[in-house]
Image 1 (tube, protein in one colour):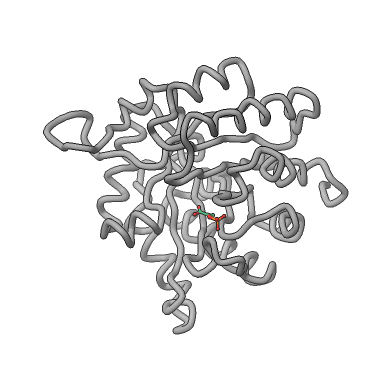
Image 2 (cartoon, rainbow, N blue to C red):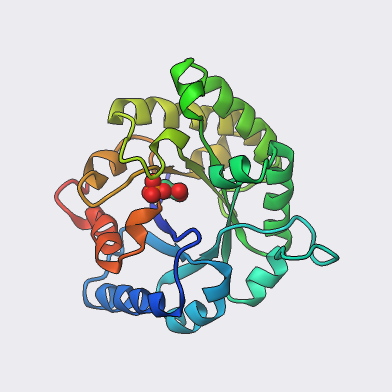
Length: 257
Ligand code: PEP
């Protein structure tokens, strides 16, 4: 089986005015000077910056993603943005089911699945987030939660070419806490088994599973080379091009095989 090329994606969340686009200019420059061909890279700025980001990144190897979409292509949904609109603005991927949307906006697995299908309809890659809360972690319910979220959120027609799974323990997001590498390996392996079961081994074994939650330059090496970890979804540390580039360049560092 061919190895999965890792992906490092930056989720800017609700951060960044026009002035923050200088970070994309810097990132592009850093990658032009010292490319990291071992991994793919993506930045997901807020929707307000997508068109301008697309202009800055045109012709570079940095992909552009969005952070959420509505399941429908258009209609009377004030304030929402469809997957087609994101594609029109220059995005090639969209995050769906981030825990901040599941929690802040009460998004169900069924809605997340509908958003993933909307992404495919618009020709976008769906980055489907799953992860247990702190209480579920404490109660030993993590494996059950992940299984339920995969079954409910990942469409049966998901393919490795158009879908990325991001495992993000909610208690690790923005907290500075991370699971041990052994736990990350155990959980990513369980996610892989669930994907194999849902989608068949050809797709399940080829699908990227990113780890997300307090990834930083200082801990990237211990988290990114764990079995069944195929990259990272990075929040806070993606806001500064130098930090984000350092995480990405872990793939050409001493731990790289
Ligand atoms: C995220 O919310 O996707 C994330 C991984 O955040 P952070 O890296 O800041 O923990």
